[in-house]
Length: 79
Image (cartoon, rainbow, N blue to C red):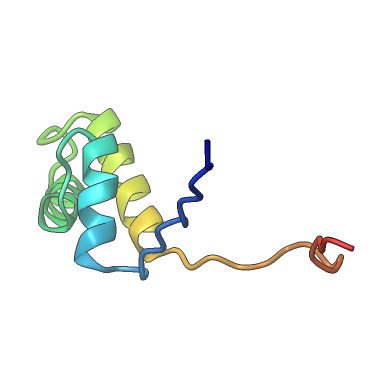
């Protein structure tokens, strides 16, 4: 029985694919909705609940983040 290896999917920062992936975890959030929530909450804090505001901020930060290597050790290799 052969084992199949699946490669990890990589998504470019701020891409539509990453937006839809993150949106599924943030309850259907989109970039436009997140920007609207942040803008409207800045003008009138009573317009959106604070939890929605935090989710919108976190969504946009996750959407714009870029992966970076933090380990200084060389990668694992097979002898």
